[in-house]
Length: 319
View 1 (cartoon, rainbow, N blue to C red):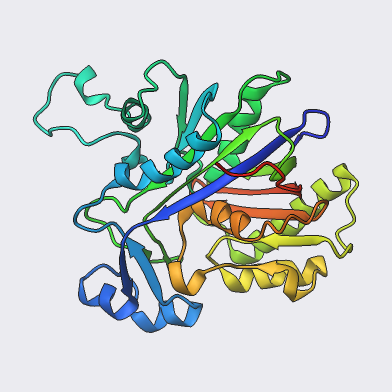
View 2: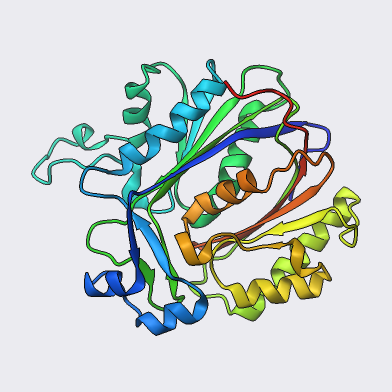
């Protein structure tokens, strides 16, 4: 558990970019891009996804969120990158290339070169899968430390690796190609990061009932550590666009009303990997100072994480 009450960190400037190509389930099935039957995915609630078009790739997805962040943070102290798929950590190289260093074409470096940020420190991760939003927060928090220096830009981007399908066979999760970003710093705006609770296991499968129990336990543990009353009317919970039945049970056991249960865009944009949380938080920021947002992440690896954010008045105008 990471608590940030005495080390005030805020996030703002949340943005995202979806792939241009929108398909429904029948279109995905006809293109041979599904592992599961259409009716099984539809039963969960999926209807469409977004994918990169012929003129797009991982790089073109990442540029808009990076541009958005730099317009609001012209002098970052570092950039933190995350990918849910390991294949996205490097720019593709020629398969015949035998020189070791020539194959180390890291994606963050390619993005920073595009923006002439050639000497800016950058950090990257992928092993936490779709819990990447929380990995970005933990890394940014460590980089900020207790200094009052410039903010950190956080970026996550993923495109379906070549040769795989858009859905997970066993888990029945439909995904979209997406990139998103935000800024972490000391400026009082957006959301204050209060705490993060994180669990990892090397098991390849966790029963849904265990996911429910652990999520409830981890939220209650952190709320207790932060002195937060979950029964208060100013608490909302954000879930990733997977396992809707499991999250319904979590909300039920936490005794949080359904109107404060946020499962956003599952039918329209499917699961956007580590970007789900960024998209949801951007949409649900209503300048309601003091409202608490619990964010749940689950990712391959396996990882389960929750964080608690406090909404602030976003009084600094966008440029």
